[in-house]
Image 1: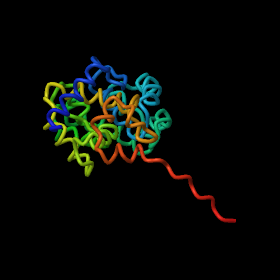
Image 2 (image 1 turned 90 degrees about the vertical axis):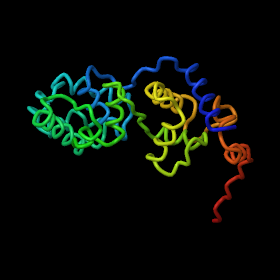
Image 3 (image 1 turned 45 degrees about the horizontal axis):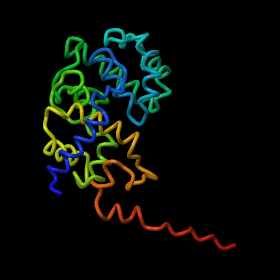
Length: 225
């Protein structure tokens, strides 16, 4: 099957399963989305959504956030993990937003990625969901599924982003990014996945992957005593 045909079929299945996927991180504006995405690094969206109401009750604008100390922010966001680095980044980016951007979240990749703690994926999420600018954020689910479905070689996140952008229409990027995340969570886990029963892997995965999945598992040898 040609890659273009495979991509079109995948898009059709995802549109049927998730016609209007919601953004999984609760937010009210570009700033609260930026902070929520930063907190989601190595943390579940559920835990972020449980934590941000407490943080935003104290500070939901850059002006209010800089009035908190990094230590105070850290105490609130501890459940999200990596709190020392994340608290410094949130305080630091809030300060830069006030100093360089009039308290507003910038609308370019260059300016976003210059903020503390903001990498390309975080900037991509903000650009496409807050400003409706073309982007295709690649998280672990998308990177894994693109390789599993033979849409990219899995060598790097940068390569995956470039490949999927070339395969799918720009008008669908925002929806597809979310659809892939939900599909990866609900239908296509990284471990103990039944490729043959998956609505996409069953036909899109490589023959080698499908054969490996069907191969009988040899019992583990018991250690000698």
